[in-house]
Image 1: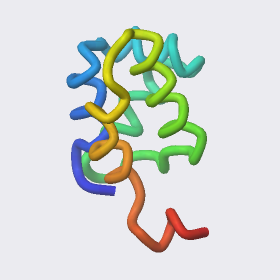
Image 2 (image 1 turned 135 degrees about the vertical axis):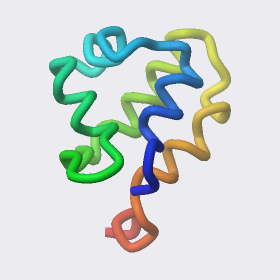
Image 3 (image 1 turned 60 degrees about the vertical axis):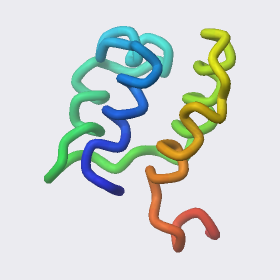
Length: 80
């Protein structure tokens, strides 16, 4: 995962860490761990779909975050 990909998406959606955590139904510490450049926790596969759903709920163009969502996993993980 490129460093800061999730954080960049969160910022693009104009969300704070607590807001994103609430929308993804996880704790704030979990979001922070996912955003770490090094030593962060792996991001579950459900997160990109949920981020796209968040973008739709916020009336944002889902394609506005598509590049960032695609960047969450290396190509080999996307094919699995």
